[in-house]
Amino acid sequence: MLWWMWVFVGLGCLAVEVLLPGGIFMLFFGAAALLLGALVAAGMGGPIGFQWGLFSILSVVSLLTLRSPILRRMSRSGDAPERIDSLIGKSVLLTEDLAPGAEGKAELRGTSWTARNVGVEPLAQGESCAVEQVDGLKLLVRRIQT
Image 1: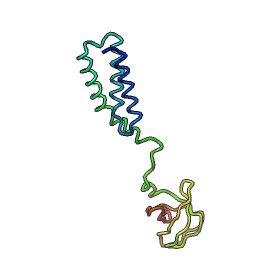
Image 2: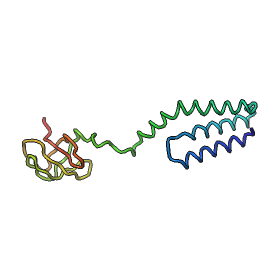
Image 3: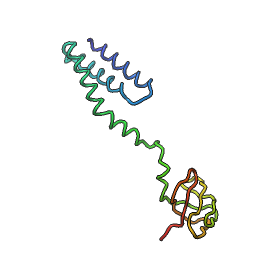
Image 4: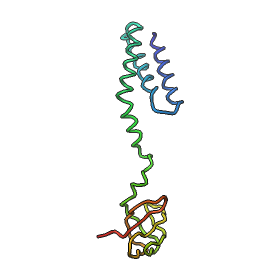
């Protein structure tokens, strides 16, 4: 095939990747076609059968070796939501007094939460407490033991 045909196929694959939601598949076929277009333009493409074989090998090998690391890297991005159970053990600041078993307000990371005192001793406003459990949008807190 001519070099510009491989470039056209590569750009088409990349366009399909952008338009379709999903798991990053066509990126590798598009990149392989663009690479092959560059090789053919440089005079190193060989016969058509060799080009198609090289395209297949480049596509599949890159898909199998690079897709998982790319997906892992994308899932660790900073805008990934934090798991709610990761709040266990975090320190909250009470914004009102809490008797044992009572509910009130506490602040965690700049956000006001409903908190329940699961300890046996009263907690004072302004005191730091530890999150022991998360129940929906309610934090179950206890005095930090020193």
